[in-house]
Amino acid sequence: MEKFKKIQSTAIPLTIENVDTDQIIPARFLKATDRNGFGDNVFRDWRFNKDNSKNEDFVLNNPKYSGSILVAGDNFGCGSSREHATWALSDYGLKVIVSSFFADIFKGNALNNGLLPIQVSPDFLNALLGEITKQPETKLEVDLEKQIISVVGTSFSSTFDIDAYKKTCMIKGYDDIDYLLSKKNEIEQFENTTK
Image (cartoon, rainbow, N blue to C red; front, side, top):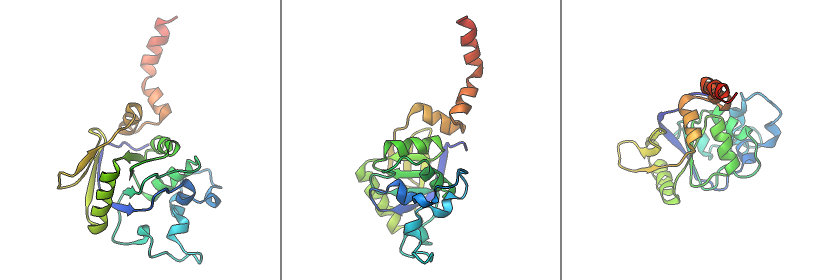
C-alpha cells in the first residue's frame, strides 16, 4: 500500500444517501480477480446511460468537480461485503471517502486497501457538501497523523476516529503481512525468551 500521512485535494460531492456496494461496482463486473480496471466501472449504472453514453447529470461526469476525496451522503458502503467496491474507488483515483456513517465491512475493506474512510457528524457533512457544491474549487486537507479534516484556508474542521493499528498501517504503507514483518525482530526475541 501507499503511505498516507496528509493530503490536500478538491473533492467530489456525492449527495446520495445509502449507497450500497452494488451501486459502487455492479455485480456483473466482479469476474476479474486482479484489482486493476475496476475504476472504469465505479458507479457504472449512474455514470453511464443504457447506451453507454455518459450521464451528464451524474457528479463524476461533471467537469466542475474533481479530486481524490469523495464526500458522500449518509450510510456509504452498505449492502454486500464485496471488497471490489474499495478496489473500484481506489482504482478510480480516490484516496479518502467522507460520510456520516459507513457500513462496518466496507470500512474494514477500505482500511485494508489503503482507502481512508472518515466518519464525521451529520452537521459537518451537510455543511461540507454545501460548501463543495457551491464552490467546486474548495480544497480539503486530511491530516491522518492529527486525525483532522479541514477546509483549506478556513477554521472549518473536524476530528475523526480511526483504529490505532489501522492508522499505523496506513501511515507506514503496511498491509497486515507487512506489519507482522516489521515486528520480526521483536517476535524472534519473544520466541527466544519463551523457550
